[in-house]
Amino acid sequence: MIALVFLLAVGSYLSFSLFSSWLADHPGWFYGSVTTLGILLLAQAWLFYIFFRSSAEEKLVFEKPLQRFAYTSMGIVSFLFTFTAIRDLAAAPLRFFNLEDSLYGTGISGAIVALSFAGFVIGMMNARFRISTPLVPIPVENLPAPLEGLRIVQLSDVHFGSGPDLPQVKRLIDRALELKPDLVVLTGDIIDGDVSTLDAEMAELKRFTPPLGTWFVLGNHECYWDHERSIRAMREAGIKVLLNEGVELTHAGEKLFIAGVTDPALKHFGGKGPEVPQVPGNTALRVLLAHQPSIAPKVAEHPYHLQLSGHTHGGQFFPWNLLVRGVHRHHGGLNRLSNLWLYVSHGTGYWGPPLRLGTVGEITVLEMRRAVSS
Image (cartoon, one colour):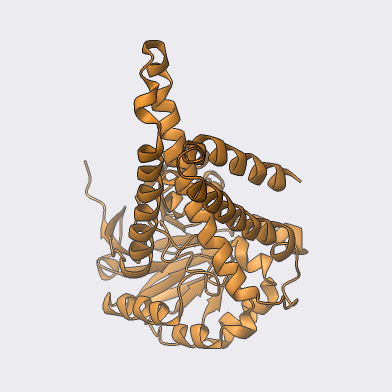
């Protein structure tokens, strides 16, 4: 009900604030725009009231194209709403001087529509073809010399099934392999669809053969699509799954510990929520994987050196890339909590609208360095 009220409110606001200026001089434009807006909002209603409420095994008629269209409509409507709201906010102080008419009229409405579609096209191209590979040095106290320069390559929030298509997935895996990882981590929301339809995407993950293995933790979207099937698919692809557990590894004669926790969403699907594993005392490097960065304060109570997370997407596109800062304390990049380093990826793929505007998808290289004493 809340979603329906919200969609009706957005539709009414755009119809009266953005399109009404066309009614007198260009009625065809007005009725065509309002009809198109209605179709876009109906697609989102289908998403909220049918698709999201269907089971993971249920096959809906035209499910994939309708899902893609609904996500696209989210992006278009978001830009229309954002730029219209910015215009209205800018016009508010002008009312005291009777100058607000300069920000209204058919030309301004047309400019907002054009700007919205330009933003969508640029954001779509960024999401599909731009990927960053930031190199993030991680200072670790008393790091043994053999572990200096050890490379962890992180992919997060790829969203197989609802995000990048297979050719883009191939390009992402190619790029990750070029980074020559010693260890690969997948920090959740890798699978976001019926895993039985994702054989080709899962086969791409088999190309990862780093010396210290490829490790995966659940995100909330794997839980929505039957986490047990996702876990089996990962294991069949040669990926090691961490479920509130850790494993000791050896690299160049030195021990390191990699652990992972489940996502809080798992509690709603018959599983256990995140429980931070205890750390062995004889390990020189200790890393924990958690999809959601919000668990970091609990992790900081343990002697881990590094937590790797995702989930936030950095807000993904304007204006959410700005608003995400008010929702997530740690929304992206490298953070410090007591003795714990926390790195939050902006995500490798995308969810929902196929957009990146104000953020760039990333495949992150975290390189271990010996901390320099101050």
